[in-house]
Length: 166
Image 1: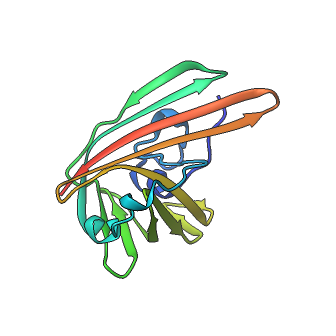
Image 2: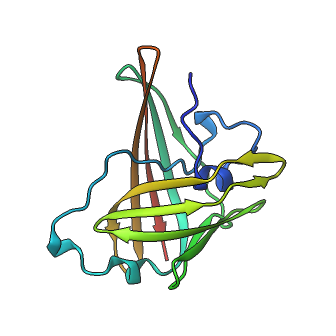
């Protein structure tokens, strides 16, 4: 099965960074073609996202040519979190690694940028990722991604639902 590109959360939450296969993704959040919702939803959600969010659930589903090939429900530890700061910077962390990023929010889309880096001996390219914010309250954050790639006539799709609490 083809690996779908790595991103910010993959580099932080993968237990073994040398195995970036989809079944080891904890937070592979990548969205293609997410657009902002109507104006009435543009009420400065960036202030609501500020703070430390603890990952409580994460499920990844992989599809090949429309058929579900794998469902992966990852184990979560107390060390898995994302921190969003008021200045647009942030960090994701687990028990073995930390990744810095910058972020903006446009409508219901969270846009995260990371610089190229080496982490645990693995080179990670610079990334810009878009995540659909499905729920954002003072205590709950639900992010959803849906990433599709085509390769030589085969369509690979990965969806991921990640739930956080403050």
